Image (tube, rainbow, N blue to C red):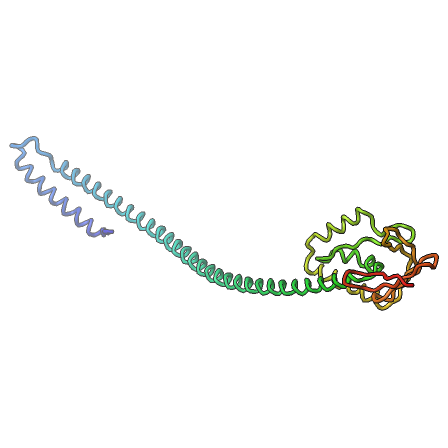
Length: 267
């Protein structure tokens, strides 16, 4: 921006006025011949008007320059603000990239642990399956009183086929047909691994508890001709059993076999 000092303007005005006076004197000498030429006063007025316009132009230029300088400062401040915001965003993106990389590492570790847990679960499932198979094989040769006792847990073992229900001396059965259907539905359902393990432990606990005691009970024994015989049976744990009918005419001894608990008539 061009700045004009006041002394310079004063000298400029004096020079212009002097020039106008000299021009006016020369014009007076020729006034007789050129009557239509402007007078000295008119020339001075014109010069002042030109100076006023020139000064107004300079003030306008100065104002525009000041406005531009102010706008430039504002724009510069906004540019700096945007640069700062862009830098913060860039730093945040870098931080997010670092966190994302760490997240990927954690996900990889979790996947690896998950695979290990799956493998452990598969191994444990195989162990539980073998325990269920051995428990089912034990129950196949168990006496009927024990089967009835462990039946609520045994029906949940995979591979276990519920034997026929033993009738009591009064002709009643421990479970009716609807209960039998519910047990079969429960057997078909996929129990959790922990529940399956609990069932095996529960059956083995009752089996072991029954083995160390002598049990006596009244029950109906199915005969080869299809009839039922009311007897008084005694079981020595899960190894041996004896029964005598109510009339003391028929006796038999029983023990477990590959096909289940069997009775052999005694002479």
